Length: 413
Ligand code: ADP
Ligand code: MG
Image 1 (cartoon, rainbow, N blue to C red):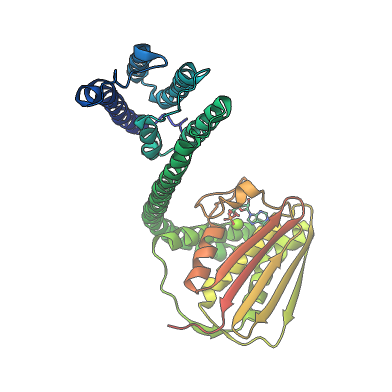
Image 2 (cartoon, rainbow, N blue to C red):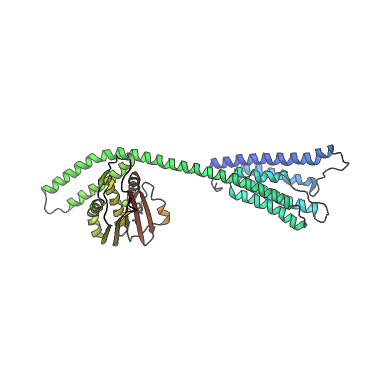
């Protein structure tokens, strides 16, 4: 979890974790002390003067209470994230000083460890924060090691070993928490994406229906006008072309709403590609783009919805042409792979796609073009998926883009 996140929900969770931690810390610290230094000696048969708290003695309680006050202050201020670090660092400092005051220059045997150290480590996963876990584990273990080295004593290494084992347990717990949270987030994001699509889709279908009818009469009348007025008006073809463009956008939009009924029939991939190239030919020529097609034959007929595949390749080839405003070459390669898959790759020499944008390609309406819709790739991807195929994009900025479509030749249903 990111600590920089200021979401009130996350701050609330952190506060809950901190409160739990403060309770446990203080209850364990004080009950251990009271039991060990005040109650146990009363019942001890030996006539010894108790497990005196040496080192800092009773002064130790002062910083512990001080810490609690600081914690309350930060909780009030609404900034709970620091508290756990303040605790672990202060504990480390206090304990080092305490131990050194107690053992340095004496022959007394080192006797370790406070139970709160076990609390620190075992409960570190409640903050679901790897940085904090490492601070606690490395801090506590190296503290024991340092004390051992300074005192030239072997004993502090034992608690270090115990802490190491506990750290491993805590680490396993923490990674489980983390991976669970990650998959929840993932599921949520997927759902969100689907929901967004569903809403967009419903809207698109509704609007699409409304646009379609007036559009087809518009096209009809334009064609009629063109026939009546055959000479001297170069605007009609442009008008018809633009109407077709609106139509194809509407088609794309409507595909998002209701996935169309698939009609699987045998079709020749050669025809599909030839059709798309004929449609895009004008645009390519205008931009000085040459298209080279290689078919590594013989190519068996393909089980597919021909109309939809045409739409896919139309989108892909259009994108390739649009990526080369200064002209260039597109290579279309069609071949059969392992007798099962039809592989079509479309490679351009265009401006390419940045790594950052590649991640956005699946998003509806993601476009970098002035008059783009950002629907082409998304719809194409969906159609290919509906064919149980795969669409992959490799791209290098400034060099070009290669789109690879792989389709099963026969469709199992
Ligand atoms: P549109 O073409 O309407 O922008 P698409 O879904 O077809 O929508 O493409 C989305 C984006 O992906 C484009 O805006 C472009 O940035 C990028 N893109 C797709 N194909 C290519 C390509 N061949 N070369 C460079 N960029 C591409
Ligand atoms: Mg496009």
